[in-house]
Amino acid sequence: MRELFTMWQNTRMIVMTAISASAYVAVLLPFKGFVIIPGLTEVRPGAAIPVVFSFLFGPAAAWGTGFGNIIAETL
Image (tube, rainbow, N blue to C red):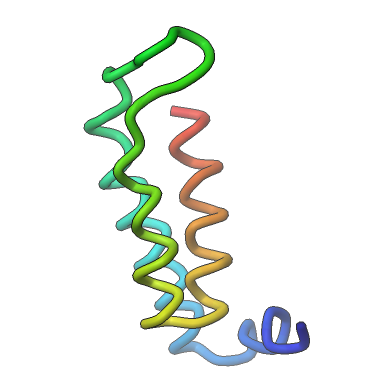
């Protein structure tokens, strides 16, 4: 749990957070129009991004996909 907060002291981890957030948004936005049941479900191939990036970036991927999800939901 400590790693989730101490990562903000490392510039490299902050950059990896930004990379994972931007990649998550870039994958989610093109599929925003593919709605299966309006207001309930949609096609989200971006759900694979957190799994892949968690192996690559660790805690930075958790923060990045969280920020990316907030950005994609507001657009």
